[in-house]
Image (cartoon, rainbow, N blue to C red; front, side, top):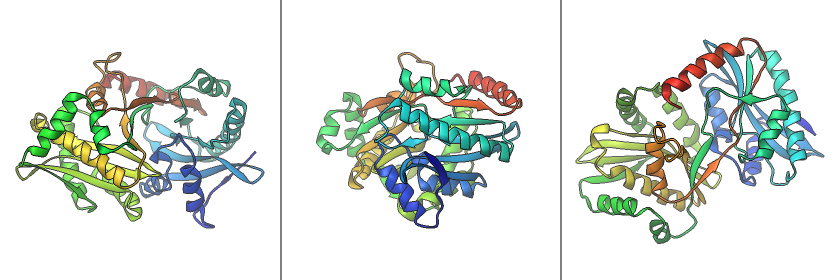
Length: 349
């Protein structure tokens, strides 16, 4: 096997996206446009392809993040491997080739650790692959390590019937309520309205928010390919909820969301989600990914347990990934380890 960069020239974008279209375990964090978004934030990226006999078998979007506590390389929800790699030995070879390249980049970029956030199924066999290469569990994950998903290939009627009774009832109540209106927006100007709500939620829940620049640049990265939309809920003429929908590679993702706390008893968010699911169906998506998941039974006090119960009401299934793996490349890694461990405890994760 050999590894080399896939560049925008020589039809690199099409090669990357067409390969991912044929893979089953993936998320938009490995899309070409997510790489463009990272570059717009000032992050350095490498789009790595792993080949055998000229055939592309895996891709790994690698991003350099720099923070005050240190810098690191991260492979978000990757590497993404071909369905042709069916044996553990072939997947191990992919990881070995990738790790050799990542260590080389780590030396060149003088980073403190390598982080891989796999989207591989959480099995003992897959976990052992990372352990065998010297990786260990991260103190705090950067991206979802499990997700709630819904197959939306069924009819709208069947999808409705598959929902929790309460969820179905609240959607129908919202549809009947003349004061509730859901709109779709492809206008970047509406990102500012979303950000205002996001900041209101931050005040109540006390977490570190994304910036307006972050939201705007993410929107701008996906908008040229018509892969993003804002869903906005109005109640009596006031915007009370909104969410980002990303449509990529026959999949839809419920990414960012905000609901003004004082309107949580208004069922607008249920109708908002249903409209996003219907839009995903119109775009030919097969899977609707509600994003992060936390078991509300095992971890009822987890900050994501409430949102997870909301997502589960629409029907679907959980998909758990191999937990995020770290490989230190400098003693400074332990500074990050301690800081992230403290943050995990404070956030109740």
